[in-house]
Structures are given as structure tokens and as C-alpha cells.
Length: 178
Image 1 (cartoon, rainbow, N blue to C red):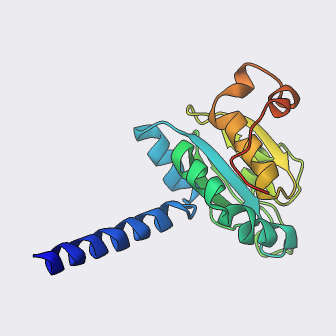
Image 2 (cartoon, rainbow, N blue to C red; image 1 turned 60 degrees about the vertical axis):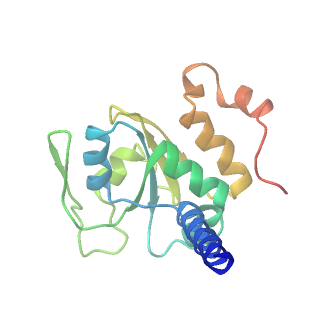
């Protein structure tokens, strides 16, 4: 009986460990998947707009998006989307078909990326959409975890409706230990 209990505790511990590991990684969706999910179960969209050649995009993937605090919060409050700004795939959204008019040409931007970034093509950038799939804003640049955390919480907690980001940031208490 004691041996059976020990095995049960071991299996339970391994299971909980695996579950917590899964939650500490960002569950990325395509734009289309996130839109469909948001229609059924409304959540904001966090859209990482990147390119394959962007070194800072890769760095943000390897650092910021690997941080467990960032990953857990993104998975909880948003549908996180990875969107290649140079994609050649047509995307239907809000009654319009977005395409890459220069498909096949070097560094040609997809119309959806142009719309999300409001024509300010800078990589990496993050576009935030509300639960009604309306663009809130786009934030350009690389952000390490300690700088990304207040941004995602500013939008995730709807603080953007109450105050400017600078004011929010002054009182922000991070969960990331430096």
C-alpha cells in the first residue's frame, strides 16, 4: 500500500510538472484561428508582427516569449498570434481580403500587416486588438520580458481605458525578478 501511494505521488508530481511546463510556453495561433476563437469566446488578440529576416524578432522569440510570466499571462488574457508581415497567404477579415500585392518580391508587406501597423512598418511590432476585434494600437520594437510585462498587463487589465501608459507604468509592480 505504501509503495502504491509513493507511485501515485510520483505520477501526480510528474503530471503537475508537465501541465505547468505547457502553461509556461506561449500557445501561438494563426490570425484566422484567433479570430474564430475570439468570436466564440471573446478575448483580446496579441499579434506579434515579425519577419523571417528580423534579428530582433528572433531575439524576442528566444527571450521575452520564453519567459514564464509573459507566456502565462499571454495565454490567460489573449489569443497570442504570430503573423509574418511578408506572408503571401490571403486572409479574410472583417469583410475584406488582405493579400501581399508584391508576393515573391523581397521584403514585400502583407496588407494585413500594413493595416495592423497603420503603415508604420517596423519589426518586431505588437498589435493589440480588443474583444470586438478592433485595433487598439501597435507598439513597435524589441521588448525584454521586464518591459513587455507592463505593456501586456496594461491592455490585459483594460487599464488603457482609464489612464495613459506612463501613469500606469509608474505604479506597476512586476512579477519578474531581476
